[in-house]
Image (cartoon, one colour):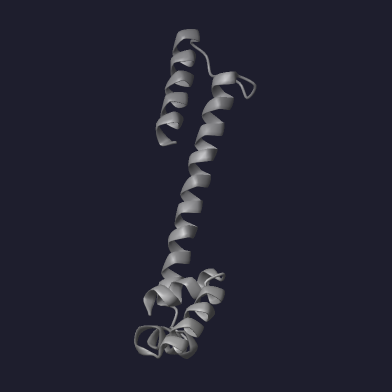
Length: 104
């Protein structure tokens, strides 16, 4: 987390101040600070990629098949409702179809 990265950086700074020296690459505080900063950067990249994926999925059009199945589910005969529910359940195994079904 960002808090952990900040703590690691503070510990490194405190060590350097206490020892009146710059920590070398093998210093445990330097390693911890570098690892924490790397984890924060990786988490930020993952967060941005997730946001882009959501934006792409929400902009995707709803297929005519999904629209028809949802329409049948809402106002079709009992037999059509059962068939539509089964078809939608099958389609819901796909994440993109889940988004379409939710939007429909």
